Length: 80
Image 1 (spheres, rainbow, N blue to C red):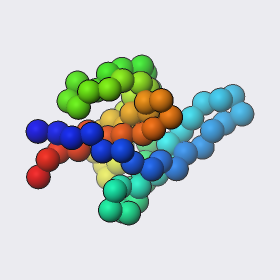
Image 2 (image 1 turned 30 degrees about the horizontal axis):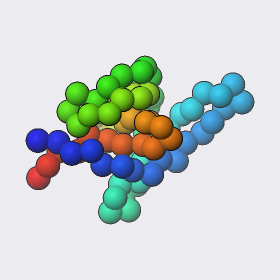
Image 3 (image 1 turned 90 degrees about the horizontal axis):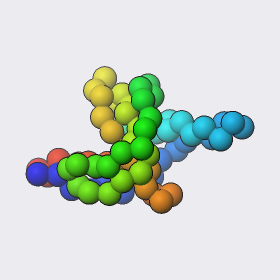
Image 4 (image 1 turned 120 degrees about the horizontal axis):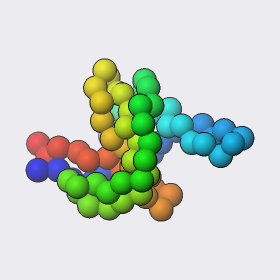
């Protein structure tokens, strides 16, 4: 089971307009570094709904997705 978790994202916007997420701030305040941007495309979240730009990133050595939807960022978080 997954849930949609809105997160704060620290990013860099280049003069070309390209956006690169640098850090994700989880709901408990913990900060995760985006080690690598792997891919970016328009896509829907099949686990929690919603669509927008999907960023495939590497965080803590693992590949994961973060989504930007209408100016807000979210992740697909596993329920505990």
